[in-house]
Length: 222
Image (tube, rainbow, N blue to C red):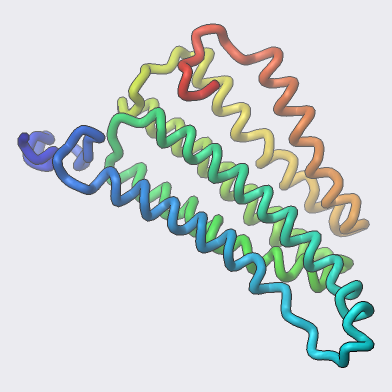
């Protein structure tokens, strides 16, 4: 089989087909999974083991409640991003250099998530910790939308999306961006309510799924 790099036009970005005998497509997929796995593992590192006497251990653990809570919140969040990334990757037939670069920036946001998680756990009442957290997740969600748009525009998807399907997927990706950014001014007044506001993503995405989801949406995105 001819190397995809040799088949591409001289001025076209290099594409790595899923059926290529090379490892390029799999390398990107495996690297992405590794970043998710490491980021989810590093979340627990932010929860330090208390150094106290046996008698004070219970009180010390109660003081860690916010850190433990932020760990589980971020674990669920990163897990949701991994699931979305997995579903998106399952629908690809190839990747090119543009998508690889966007994916790297996306993975940078995922890899950075343990830092704002630790901040939110230790400084829950400080607005800056929640703002950094919200910005990080907004960037990750925004880059998901960019990835989908690039894959559609440059024919990297296994199934060509209709305009309605593309609009549905982009709107679903942008909803978290809007919610996370909207939570920033809320955090300046009340950090706890800012965190609660993120729950709006659930009914908003449910509404988009109910009212905008097209019948011709491919099985990879259902």
